[in-house]
Image 1 (cartoon, rainbow, N blue to C red):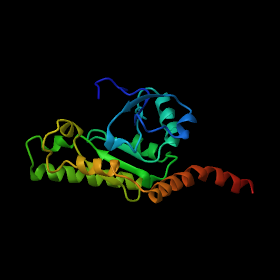
Image 2 (cartoon, rainbow, N blue to C red):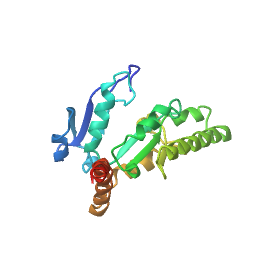
Image 3 (tube, rainbow, N blue to C red):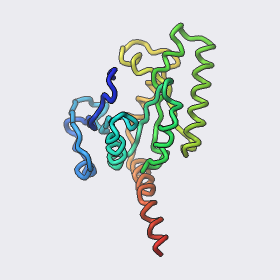
Image 4 (cartoon, rainbow, N blue to C red):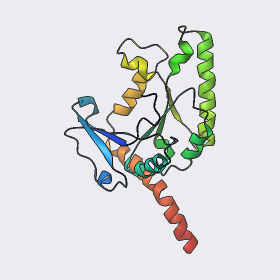
Length: 205
Protein backbone atom coordinates (compact mmCIF):
# COMPACT_ATOMS: atom_id res chain seq x y z
CA UNK A 1 0.00 0.00 0.00
CA UNK A 2 1.09 3.56 -0.61
CA UNK A 3 -0.23 7.13 -0.47
CA UNK A 4 0.85 7.39 -4.12
CA UNK A 5 -1.60 6.16 -6.73
CA UNK A 6 -1.15 4.14 -8.81
CA UNK A 7 1.28 2.29 -6.54
CA UNK A 8 1.30 -0.98 -8.51
CA UNK A 9 2.25 0.06 -12.04
CA UNK A 10 3.39 -3.33 -13.33
CA UNK A 11 2.02 -6.87 -13.15
CA UNK A 12 3.75 -8.52 -10.18
CA UNK A 13 3.94 -12.31 -10.20
CA UNK A 14 4.63 -14.34 -7.04
CA UNK A 15 5.33 -18.07 -7.30
CA UNK A 16 7.09 -20.84 -5.41
CA UNK A 17 10.64 -21.24 -6.68
CA UNK A 18 9.87 -24.82 -7.79
CA UNK A 19 6.54 -24.01 -9.47
CA UNK A 20 6.95 -23.30 -13.21
CA UNK A 21 4.97 -20.63 -15.00
CA UNK A 22 2.26 -22.01 -17.32
CA UNK A 23 2.59 -21.46 -21.11
CA UNK A 24 -0.12 -18.77 -21.02
CA UNK A 25 2.36 -16.40 -19.34
CA UNK A 26 4.72 -16.70 -22.28
CA UNK A 27 1.89 -15.65 -24.58
CA UNK A 28 0.89 -12.66 -22.44
CA UNK A 29 0.81 -9.36 -24.30
CA UNK A 30 2.31 -7.43 -21.40
CA UNK A 31 5.51 -7.98 -19.44
CA UNK A 32 5.64 -8.63 -15.71
CA UNK A 33 8.02 -8.63 -12.79
CA UNK A 34 8.53 -11.97 -11.07
CA UNK A 35 9.28 -12.80 -7.44
CA UNK A 36 9.88 -16.30 -6.11
CA UNK A 37 9.33 -17.57 -2.56
CA UNK A 38 9.59 -20.77 -0.50
CA UNK A 39 6.17 -20.67 1.20
CA UNK A 40 4.94 -24.28 1.11
CA UNK A 41 1.30 -23.30 1.71
CA UNK A 42 1.36 -21.32 -1.55
CA UNK A 43 3.31 -23.84 -3.63
CA UNK A 44 0.32 -24.85 -5.76
CA UNK A 45 -0.80 -21.37 -6.85
CA UNK A 46 0.67 -18.40 -8.67
CA UNK A 47 -0.38 -14.99 -7.36
CA UNK A 48 -0.55 -12.00 -9.71
CA UNK A 49 -0.94 -8.45 -8.43
CA UNK A 50 -2.37 -6.28 -11.21
CA UNK A 51 -2.29 -2.48 -11.55
CA UNK A 52 -5.36 -0.44 -10.61
CA UNK A 53 -7.83 -0.75 -13.48
CA UNK A 54 -9.14 2.79 -12.80
CA UNK A 55 -5.88 4.61 -12.09
CA UNK A 56 -4.87 7.89 -13.70
CA UNK A 57 -2.69 5.87 -16.10
CA UNK A 58 -5.09 4.80 -18.84
CA UNK A 59 -2.71 2.10 -20.09
CA UNK A 60 -3.24 0.22 -16.80
CA UNK A 61 -6.81 -0.56 -17.85
CA UNK A 62 -5.71 -2.28 -21.06
CA UNK A 63 -2.92 -4.08 -19.18
CA UNK A 64 -5.42 -5.54 -16.70
CA UNK A 65 -7.86 -6.65 -19.41
CA UNK A 66 -5.09 -8.24 -21.49
CA UNK A 67 -3.48 -10.06 -18.56
CA UNK A 68 -6.78 -11.53 -17.35
CA UNK A 69 -6.41 -14.14 -20.10
CA UNK A 70 -3.64 -15.82 -18.09
CA UNK A 71 -5.68 -16.13 -14.86
CA UNK A 72 -8.10 -18.78 -13.63
CA UNK A 73 -9.52 -17.06 -10.53
CA UNK A 74 -9.80 -13.32 -9.90
CA UNK A 75 -9.94 -11.60 -6.50
CA UNK A 76 -11.30 -8.04 -6.50
CA UNK A 77 -10.33 -5.96 -3.43
CA UNK A 78 -12.76 -3.16 -2.55
CA UNK A 79 -12.99 -0.78 0.38
CA UNK A 80 -15.86 0.97 2.21
CA UNK A 81 -14.72 4.26 0.65
CA UNK A 82 -14.91 3.07 -2.98
CA UNK A 83 -17.18 0.01 -3.15
CA UNK A 84 -20.03 2.04 -4.68
CA UNK A 85 -17.90 3.48 -7.51
CA UNK A 86 -19.94 2.87 -10.67
CA UNK A 87 -16.85 2.60 -12.89
CA UNK A 88 -15.91 -0.68 -11.19
CA UNK A 89 -19.23 -2.32 -12.04
CA UNK A 90 -19.02 -1.08 -15.62
CA UNK A 91 -15.53 -2.59 -15.80
CA UNK A 92 -16.87 -5.94 -14.52
CA UNK A 93 -19.15 -6.14 -17.56
CA UNK A 94 -16.04 -6.20 -19.79
CA UNK A 95 -14.57 -9.28 -18.08
CA UNK A 96 -13.37 -11.95 -20.53
CA UNK A 97 -13.92 -14.50 -17.72
CA UNK A 98 -16.73 -16.51 -16.23
CA UNK A 99 -17.99 -14.37 -13.36
CA UNK A 100 -18.47 -17.35 -11.08
CA UNK A 101 -14.66 -17.53 -10.91
CA UNK A 102 -14.48 -14.20 -9.06
CA UNK A 103 -14.10 -13.45 -5.36
CA UNK A 104 -14.86 -10.06 -3.84
CA UNK A 105 -13.09 -8.66 -0.78
CA UNK A 106 -14.44 -5.78 1.29
CA UNK A 107 -11.21 -4.74 3.00
CA UNK A 108 -10.69 -2.15 5.78
CA UNK A 109 -13.89 -3.20 7.56
CA UNK A 110 -12.16 -2.37 10.86
CA UNK A 111 -13.40 1.20 10.34
CA UNK A 112 -16.86 -0.01 11.39
CA UNK A 113 -15.48 -1.26 14.71
CA UNK A 114 -13.02 1.46 15.77
CA UNK A 115 -14.77 1.59 19.16
CA UNK A 116 -14.91 -2.18 19.42
CA UNK A 117 -17.63 -4.67 18.47
CA UNK A 118 -21.00 -2.92 18.60
CA UNK A 119 -24.54 -3.32 17.19
CA UNK A 120 -24.14 -0.01 15.33
CA UNK A 121 -20.96 -1.20 13.60
CA UNK A 122 -22.50 -4.55 12.73
CA UNK A 123 -25.55 -2.81 11.25
CA UNK A 124 -23.41 -0.44 9.19
CA UNK A 125 -21.33 -3.34 7.83
CA UNK A 126 -24.48 -5.31 7.03
CA UNK A 127 -25.90 -2.34 5.11
CA UNK A 128 -22.70 -1.91 3.06
CA UNK A 129 -22.59 -5.63 2.24
CA UNK A 130 -26.23 -5.61 1.10
CA UNK A 131 -25.57 -2.63 -1.18
CA UNK A 132 -22.40 -4.26 -2.53
CA UNK A 133 -24.29 -7.48 -3.26
CA UNK A 134 -26.99 -5.53 -5.15
CA UNK A 135 -24.40 -3.71 -7.27
CA UNK A 136 -22.65 -6.98 -8.13
CA UNK A 137 -25.91 -8.69 -9.02
CA UNK A 138 -26.83 -5.81 -11.32
CA UNK A 139 -23.39 -6.13 -12.96
CA UNK A 140 -24.10 -9.77 -13.82
CA UNK A 141 -22.63 -11.58 -10.80
CA UNK A 142 -25.63 -13.73 -9.86
CA UNK A 143 -24.24 -15.25 -6.63
CA UNK A 144 -21.22 -13.15 -5.61
CA UNK A 145 -18.80 -14.63 -3.06
CA UNK A 146 -17.90 -11.79 -0.67
CA UNK A 147 -15.52 -11.77 2.30
CA UNK A 148 -15.32 -8.82 4.71
CA UNK A 149 -11.97 -8.46 6.44
CA UNK A 150 -9.11 -6.28 7.57
CA UNK A 151 -5.82 -7.25 5.94
CA UNK A 152 -3.98 -4.81 8.23
CA UNK A 153 -5.25 -6.61 11.32
CA UNK A 154 -4.31 -10.00 9.85
CA UNK A 155 -0.81 -8.74 9.05
CA UNK A 156 -0.24 -7.89 12.72
CA UNK A 157 -0.36 -11.65 13.45
CA UNK A 158 -2.51 -11.24 16.55
CA UNK A 159 -5.82 -12.83 17.48
CA UNK A 160 -8.27 -11.59 14.86
CA UNK A 161 -11.58 -9.91 15.63
CA UNK A 162 -14.68 -12.08 15.35
CA UNK A 163 -15.92 -10.13 12.32
CA UNK A 164 -12.65 -10.54 10.37
CA UNK A 165 -13.11 -13.21 7.70
CA UNK A 166 -9.47 -13.23 6.62
CA UNK A 167 -8.93 -16.86 7.76
CA UNK A 168 -11.97 -18.02 5.74
CA UNK A 169 -10.73 -16.19 2.64
CA UNK A 170 -7.18 -17.50 3.07
CA UNK A 171 -8.45 -21.08 3.43
CA UNK A 172 -10.53 -20.80 0.25
CA UNK A 173 -7.76 -19.32 -1.88
CA UNK A 174 -5.00 -21.64 -0.69
CA UNK A 175 -6.99 -24.87 -0.62
CA UNK A 176 -6.00 -27.64 -3.00
CA UNK A 177 -8.33 -27.89 -5.99
CA UNK A 178 -8.69 -31.29 -7.62
CA UNK A 179 -8.35 -31.77 -11.38
CA UNK A 180 -12.11 -31.90 -11.90
CA UNK A 181 -12.62 -28.47 -10.33
CA UNK A 182 -9.65 -26.97 -12.19
CA UNK A 183 -11.05 -28.31 -15.47
CA UNK A 184 -14.44 -26.75 -14.70
CA UNK A 185 -12.87 -23.37 -13.92
CA UNK A 186 -10.82 -23.35 -17.12
CA UNK A 187 -13.72 -24.59 -19.27
CA UNK A 188 -16.06 -21.91 -17.95
CA UNK A 189 -13.47 -19.21 -18.67
CA UNK A 190 -12.82 -20.54 -22.18
CA UNK A 191 -16.57 -20.52 -22.94
CA UNK A 192 -16.75 -16.83 -22.04
CA UNK A 193 -13.59 -15.97 -24.01
CA UNK A 194 -14.91 -17.74 -27.13
CA UNK A 195 -18.38 -16.23 -26.97
CA UNK A 196 -17.55 -13.12 -29.11
CA UNK A 197 -15.92 -15.37 -31.75
CA UNK A 198 -18.93 -17.69 -31.90
CA UNK A 199 -21.31 -14.75 -32.14
CA UNK A 200 -19.30 -13.33 -35.06
CA UNK A 201 -19.37 -16.72 -36.82
CA UNK A 202 -23.13 -16.96 -36.33
CA UNK A 203 -23.61 -13.51 -37.84
CA UNK A 204 -21.48 -14.46 -40.84
CA UNK A 205 -23.43 -17.71 -41.27
